[in-house]
Image 1 (spheres, rainbow over the protein chains, first blue to last red):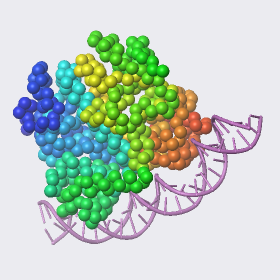
Image 2 (image 1 turned 90 degrees about the vertical axis):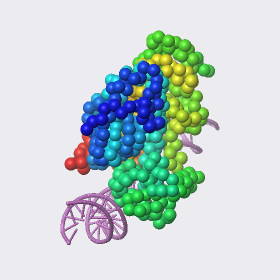
Image 3 (image 1 turned 120 degrees about the vertical axis):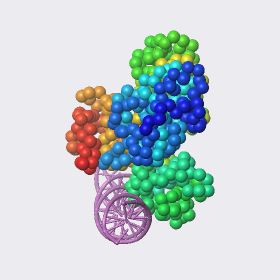
Image 4 (image 1 turned 120 degrees about the horizontal axis):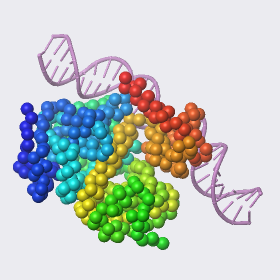
Length: 237
Length: 237
DNA sequence: CGGTGTCTTGATTCTCATCAATTACTGTGG
DNA sequence: CCACAGTAATTGATGAGAATCAAGACACCG
């Protein structure tokens, strides 16, 4: 079932760092070592704690990146769509993946073994530099999340999670194109299923979001944003 | 008062990524563009929101890296000592530093302007690769912290903060070589001054830590570690 | 038409942030 | 050297918010 070598040159994912450099001189031999793997919905792409076997890039589909936290709770760290990278934290001295990744819908991911990746980075300096920029951005995102989790209320956490999901998977004037369970939203926002439901119900009553079964719609991003900003302001002053 | 060009070759900070590569061919011209800056205790090295002006490396002293969170609260993200990097998140497309840094004691930091840094990374591939590894590690740390903040109790957060501080600044059989106020510990652990005091008092009573004024000692790291691990275990199973 | 799992709502308990008041510590000037 | 002022540390009391527990509604699937 494994489809080998989806061609990077003909790939349409403009966000992909590899695709971006697929015309660089000297990169072809590395690209040839790529393997593409199809994954069914809710299948594990990376198992937390398994030995590191390289980096992944999402060719198509949607993926959640998670770690197991306290009480065996699942903490979703981020959601990835076409072109995004998975397993990038396996680049340090760790021997095992500190995170897991699983498909939110049927997906195809491309894998580069770690040694191939290392050679590629050492020989394509511009690619390495883009990697560094990417990491800097991810680090920024993650540290923002630290700050957020430390002192935000549940309401704010949920709103923030919704804005993130909407930014990534929302289409204007319509529902978000991603079916997450309440539990998954909670695991991302860092709270419980029940609290998420309560906040969602309230937000619906307030007219800030649309709810139609599992589908969530955000008619006005700015209104939601204010819900976080205003609260900060009124306490800050 | 600015001392120019502390020589990287004679620098004793083995952890410093620049020092590590200071003998690489072709790196001298970049090293020559380094500027070293002395900072007094509690002086700001990086002001949050200021325009990015490059990367810093701690030559001597101790530094806290922080962001302003909800309610104008200070959230300490990490502590840095000799050889460590500051401002690494300014590497992405951001124009302003998303974090601040200030000296915990009299320190000297070395600065590379951003364009020099970029040139250096593009021309010294092995340095770029080490940067990537460093970022991967930082990202790992940060995401672990996210998970931690999401569901840990205050007690666990404080213990975790203590273990981090002890790992970095502890000397065996003695008190931790770093004077942090209760407020600063709280800002790092993501809680309040009062809660930190309560937990510290309890831990002292339980014989898990030593308290002598501001000085904190951790006689047995494993005992503390168990305090976190056991709680997880008993709920997980 | 059961049955299973997700979703929802309510009630209860508990943790933690906040507020308030007291005590210890530090440095400074007389 | 001591009084003092100012700051940090501590302890207690209280209330708000959130996790947990429990029970019922709903949808989906065989």
